Length: 110
Length: 113
Image (cartoon, rainbow over all chains, first blue to last red; front, side):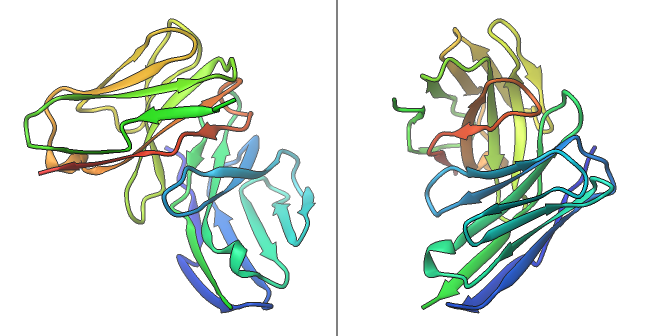
């Protein structure tokens, strides 16, 4: 069974601060996804990364896939209250289902 | 397009009762999934259907059954509910297993007393 760990589990910051959350595993993944989930809703995909060392940017969010394809990070610049939510990473090996991590719950205070 | 729809949104059951959670997608996706989400444990896969006519067990299938009724619909049945099945249940769909974006429904919050 592939296990994904995410850290920190909880994060509370002030608007305008920067933050990084992490997703780690001992398994190698062919693709890794980040989702954001808001209260009472299902997760929504933010990004998919497939190449070791890959960096993708989505406005103020920067995603990096580790060189060995075992870990990933999400960096948010100048966080806003609208960034509040549960951030989930999910990894898959070739042709297999995605396995989700437990998530990082982010709260951005105005 | 409605995306992925789930019914009901909320449900309270007594131990031993049965119920079926319904899910439908209008994106013509091949693959559909049922997850449960519990605090601190992320999403855990219960069952999935890689394509119409097939179903397979996920990580936590015990106590559940599924039916892929057609390409659009994938239902989850609890035959004899237990308090351990209290959770939020999400249905999702994607083009294929293991690479594509999964689109999630709004969830069903189930409480078993």
